[in-house]
Length: 441
Image (tube, rainbow, N blue to C red; front, top):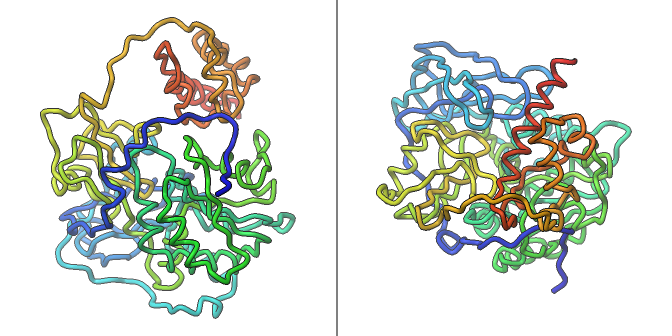
C-alpha cells in the first residue's frame, strides 16, 4: 500500500497499546466545572452569566468577542458559583473562568436539527458552527467558523481531514474513526457542502489499519473522498507536514494553508461539526485518552469540558508512588500539569501520566555539531545554530534564520545525542520575540 510522508521527523516508541483497543466510555458527570473564557486561540469570550444564575447544559455562558474568538457553553446543568481567575495551562496565564456547580442531571439547551443539512445555506452552517463554539480539537483551538469562512479571492483545492494522530500514547482519534465513521463522513459531507473543495483526503498513519479499513468502507461510492495512508512518523500530523505529504504543496513562511489552496481539520473537529449541525449540540464534551504507565485503567473517554484533571484521574486510578509527571497531551508536545486541581479545556485530547521508569534522567552534554537535529527538523531549520543564537540572545538573527517557523514538535530534542532540550529553548525565545514585536506595534 503506497504511503505519504514528509522530509525529516523521528520514530519515538508509539506506546499506543495501552489504550488503542479500549472503546470510548462516557465518564460520570462532574460535580463542578471551570469554563475558561480563553478556551480557544484569540480574544477571550465575555461572560454572559453571573453568580447565582441557573444554567442548562449547552447554555451560552461566554460570548465570543469580535474577530478571532469563540463561544463558551456550560457543560453541566447547575448554578453559577462565580467567575474566578484560574491558571490556564493552554495560555500560560491566569484567565477568567465561569464556575458551575452541577445540581442535577442534564437539562439540555440546544436546537434539535436533523440529517438534512442542505436545508441550511452555507452561511447558516458556518453560523451554527460559530454559535456552537467549535474550535480545532487537535490542540491548536483555532475557531472553526473562521477557518470555514473562505475569502472571496481564495479557492479550496484540497480539504484534508487529519487522522494521523502521530503523538505517542494518544489513541482517541483512532477510536473515534473506528467507532464513529459514519458520523465523520457526514461531517465531511457538511464541510464539502460549505467549502466545495476539488478533492478530499483523510490522512491516517498506517499504524491504524482498522481505522483505515473502516473509513474506506464508509466512503464507498464517494469518489471525491479518499483515504490517504501515511507513514508512521512524528510529527506526521502537523498541519504543514500533512499538507506537504499529501499534496506536495508547501506553505511558505508567514502564509496560511488556504494560501496554497488547502484546508486541514482534525477528525475530532469534524465530528464536533457533525454533532452541531445534525444534532444541534454545542461543544461541551469531547474525547480524551487517559494513559501512561501511571494510570491503572488507561483508555479512551468522553468527558465534559471544564472537568478538573483530578476528577478524571480519580475515575481511572493512578499509581501515585511511581508518578514522575502528568501532562496535558502526549510526551512530545504535552504541557506539564502544575496541579491536578486545574481544569481541562477544549483542546485536551489526552492526559498522560508518566512514571519514573518512562522518564529517563539523562545528563546534558555540550553540542557536538552532529547535525542530527537538522536531519529530523520537519521545517528544514538548523536547530543547533538557532540554539546558539537564542543562548546569545541574538533574537533578530534567530528570527532571520526562521525560529518563528519552529512548530515546537520536539523532534530535535528527542534525537539530540547530547540530550539538549532545544525545543524548550525555542519555545521561550519565540515568546520573547513575539512580546517584543507586540510592544513595537
